[in-house]
Image (cartoon, rainbow, N blue to C red; front, side, top):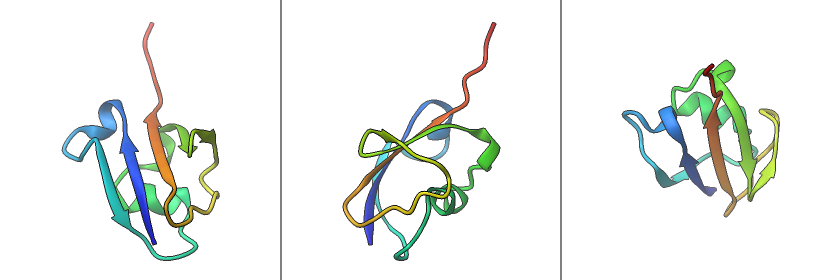
Length: 74
């Protein structure tokens, strides 16, 4: 299946901003993170088609997955 992956902030470093990627059917948000080399604890927010999801959410063909890192500061 093909999904569109959008990365934000530091997740773009040495990666990409937006890209269509192929993943096996039944892949989860966590599987996508792993394939991109992003440690799961670094994830702040994940959205599928602009709706908040968890690492266990299964993505399906044609969806858009947006990944945002945790934000720190002070």
